[in-house]
Amino acid sequence: NKMYNNYKKNIIPWIGEKIAQNRDAYKYLEESISLFPNQKKLLNILKKVGFFEVKYTNMFNGIVSIHSGFKVWYLMKVLFIITASIAIKKCNEILNQLTADNIIIDCILTKNALKMINLVELRKNIKGKIYTDKSEKKNKMLHIELSRKSDLIVLCPATANIIAKFANGIADDLASTCLIASDKQIIIIPAMNTVMWNNPINKKNVSYLIKNDIEFIGPEYGKLSCGETGLGRLSNPK
Image (cartoon, helix red, strand yellow):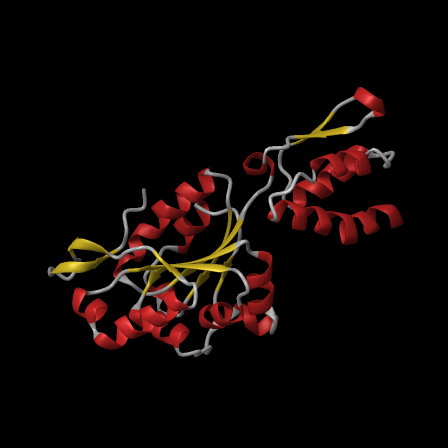
């Protein structure tokens, strides 16, 4: 048990770090697994921490073979933050596509987003968990944990409100606190009325975030849900 605990605590995080750097760590993984008499038990541990293409064989005294392709055997983890834009109705399509690509997704919903989305449908389209402001009452460090365990943070759909919070360092709920606390790449996919998007204050906030290496996708030009036409549509999920 001490050997397994040491493996979970020290070896697996090391391997995960090397994988995140796109290095070949699978050879070390195969060699280290061969030290354990009960490989099947260890396979279950590995699968729980993100190695899904791990196969037990009887060759070489039961050594475990692991697919070396980065995209094949390492599950990317995305923190998907959903805010209260009318484009929220497109989230399930986006999440379904990401899940189909073997991406593990945890979702954060803002208070107003909760009023606009079907949680039952949302749960069907992700492999991770759903978090709200209430979630942090049980775990005061949740915003740190969620930002650290994710490989990427996606803010979609992003309202002018959440963009303004982020640009001005306001962290007054779980979503905005995760953004401020993040040490990972953040992608913002905005959706709003064209006048809101072109508002000088919003444009200033967007420019400031871009200068600080925050990536924006969209918005696109077209007819909006409000009936007006212009920039503001959520980028095509495809």
